[in-house]
Amino acid sequence: MPDTYDLIVLGSGPGGYVAAIRASQLGMKVAIVERERLGGICLNWGCIPTKALLRTSEIYHYMTYADAYGLKADNIGFDLAKIVDRSRKVAGQLNAGVKGLMKKHKITVHEGFGKLAGKGRLTVEKDGRTTELSAKHILIATGARARDLPFAKADGERIWTYRHAMVPKEMPTRLLVIGSGAIGVEFASFYSDMGAEVTIVEMLPRILPVEDEEVSAFMEKQLVKQGMRILTGAGLEKLETGGEGVTASIKGKDGTVTAEAFSHAIVAIGIVPNTEQIGLDEAGVKTERGQITVDGYGRTNVEGVYAIGDVTGAPWLAHKASHEGIVCIEKIAGEDPHPFETWNIPGCTYSRPQVASVGMTEAKAREAGHEVRVGKFPFIGNGKAIALGEAEGFVKTVFDAGTGELLGAHMIGAEVTELIQGYVVARQLETTEAELMETVFAHPTLSEMMHESVLGAYGRAIHY
Image (cartoon, rainbow, N blue to C red):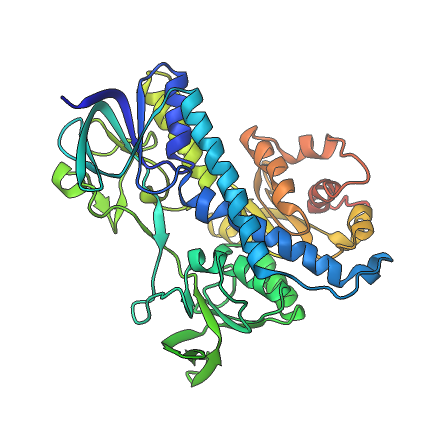
């Protein structure tokens, strides 16, 4: 007889384990199936350990500029093995935390590869043994993996994905980063601050292409100022490994192809959903381009089968998966949650400088037919930013000119990944410019720039 549950969750990333906990809170008997480590890619190989690495490079950067703060720091250096070890320990600590949460909420953990095996059934295979589980509800949260170059697959030695880039055996000297989304720019930032000579190749006309155009342009200037080389509108024709590194054939904007040598290359060209070999076709679950099709409650076209997170498509963000999971579980439990929508999901890039945004860009707002009012306030006009020595950046807000609706907010600069939530809350509460203008912001704080940007959209900025 199979082990029987109310809910089986396949995958324990930030979507899966959060959904499992919420289901337990609502009185369900829950099992979670994981083939690797609890916490999934985000906790073990993504969001968390990369931030540990970026914190190291941030501190190292400040040490090299200690004199600007009246401090002395001589003979500065680093131990790469210790840097990697700290990052892995951070991930390990959080992995242990998820294990504790599973125990606290009485969630049964099955280790192994899970696969749908018929209505209400799922098999788990490990070490040649197969266990069968059953449940009325099965939630797929298997996440995604890095996309390989079709002509040069990652080997972990000279050609890296994000997983290899987090545990380097040696520090790159000349690094090629292929792709300039959040992952590419974050790794470019880390390795550049640690001393590598970095080149970013992006086939689209600008880096961070999903961000507001002004943010992209400002970021490019900052990265070039830091010593990076940015090649936009450029394609990678060939990537060949050799004993001492890799040779890349790069096609520029003018169509000219040049061959360049690098010590290492990081491939950051997107992700692929983990939907193969888990029984979707046999179960009749509808997919499109490898992504599982769901409604606003995570329901697939097959009764009793649900999906959340990266397997369901963009945006590929941990917090999106977690919220999807909660909505899905509450609907299963008979509650009445709002269907999941993507209109108010913040995006963050933890490079130097940081980038954060929510809602429409100025261009998208105009394309959607809005008459807009735009406010923009620079970090150089903020006392706290100047005191921190972080006077590069700006805050930009986009409003509907007729209604005062906050359509979008876009930031670049120090700690903006923490600031963005203020605008996310404002949009969730359907706040207009009037309420934001009347809100008191503490002084001196970076958040004052959020206020000034709103005021600026209506010609009322005080400090700029």
